[in-house]
Length: 312
Ligand SMILES: [Zn+2]
Image (cartoon, rainbow, N blue to C red; front, side, top):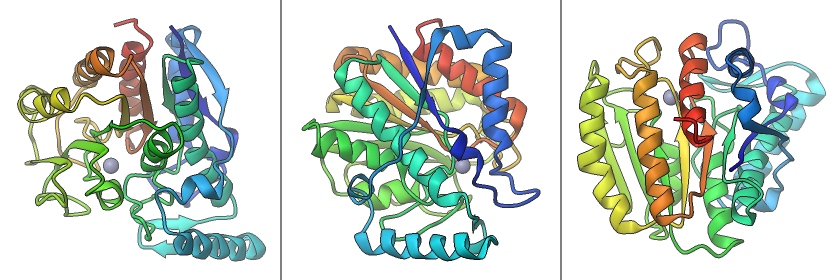
């Protein structure tokens, strides 16, 4: 089996300024750790192509994409970063990085569906799960996972796909895009209350939203997944599994106050791997979302990758 590892050097060119937690060094930390522990030999490294606007517009309005593009072109012309919201800054490299991030998710989907990879991880930034149909939010521009899920449905003709989101923050953008699209079942947990302060009341019957209080530890979260996610996912029988893989629910990550450790990410990935083996011919495309403490991020991604690569 082959686990594709998608990334691109353009993803480093998006830089929201000194001290911003969503920084290019996140990808370096993952790369360095994967190689330091010898996990690279189990992965097939692939360069992300650019997503096309047609692909992006399966999840975003054409007007949003146009406005964002014009804004980014102004920033490129000026050569100076500009803020779009209090958390989200556009710099001259942002447009290319965003196209590569979404393009990684789409290419990974094509590869997995064509049998060129058993599963795939997209080590990309900017992340995507806060980007709504028509809004940039929370470090996110294009919703990589939603774009990939729609690509699987609309282009490849799949009937049912699951989106799993284990980032510490609610994936409000993904919910905005796919709530009511009964071809998708989205299962997530998130710390609540915490940015973006949504999710406690799901926006559609195809959402399994599990708000979790701060300071909940991994054992309790595993019980919640077993009770709240798995029965719905087993019943839904997804033909493909997409993961919004944020690692900021780790206990070392200061952006949230949940208590996951690497072993919990390993366990969650094993549960999803088994689900995909039963219903989806093993097809999983996982995309990096959050995770800001560089050491715990890289260790947690490695735990996730070891399961995807069939080593754990
Ligand atoms: Zn997050």
